Length: 426
Image (cartoon, rainbow, N blue to C red):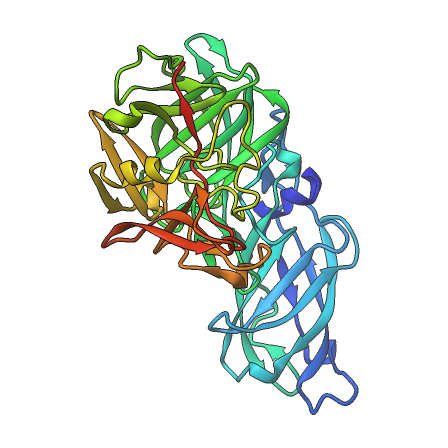
């Protein structure tokens, strides 16, 4: 990610000039590939970005900031233009491939300081990637020119400075997870947006947390927060907000009382904290009795987050203390708890009801090969959760569910599945 100086470009208005003599044919390209050089500026200097210290900072480019150009349907990246100098104005240069373009086609230009990935933020302004986009209409393909000599790149995300308080006392945040309907988790190179939870871990805990958010939907949404402070306390709460992409906000969030500690006297359906994780007390029948089921998957920072995909051999990786992978019989009991398919905060999965409270298993699908996104299957349509027991040398038991059913299942041990930690009550 770029520094704060680069971030400021997100809020800027950029003007581009493209003339026929600025597009030179590349050698041996059959009149499709063109070297393009465009003049760019940040526009009005009064258009300024949010500052970590409450001051305005003039927006500017950093050297090698990229503007990615894609065709009308977003399926083809036409090329990338890079800023040649830093400051409020610059020259953008690069090679564009006009093979997929036609006269009068509208292309999209996206200004990125990094491919936007809102998951795994650091809570500081300096670490936030910028994201803005605009359009140009193709005038001629040979040579490649545009109808207009300028384009406005509008910011596509909001930045909020959250201040968290427990009553009148500041909470020094260590980790956070945020979920809401339509919340964008990541954006692919072709502009495809994936919705999901946004999480972050602060290098230095702080009561002031800067978070970049993008929502595909307009209007007021209910944002669900899962916060852990530097002392290991957890808070789970919701807040209604209308965060408009392109605008920045400050918000003071006064939290309810932190989650209580769970123990053997905690009643079924009680939500609290045990051995460092938020959990709910679940009765798994007369033979097994009460257990604490974590509210989040291994590697997740909020209930709607998918967390880690683990092979059977590594199923216990990331579990601390006395947390464990549930047995086949424990998952069989979970299967019999009343549940319903739904999409709380826009994430598909099954919600299990225990008294007046619930816990949620997201439909994270499975990883069929080394965390390569192309090898992820059934994401958002199926959930697969390891048990601790092998079926044979190559298969192991797991819990599987979709919108229509929930079953015991066996899957290949080399696949990456989700894990929902269990804990015995002291």
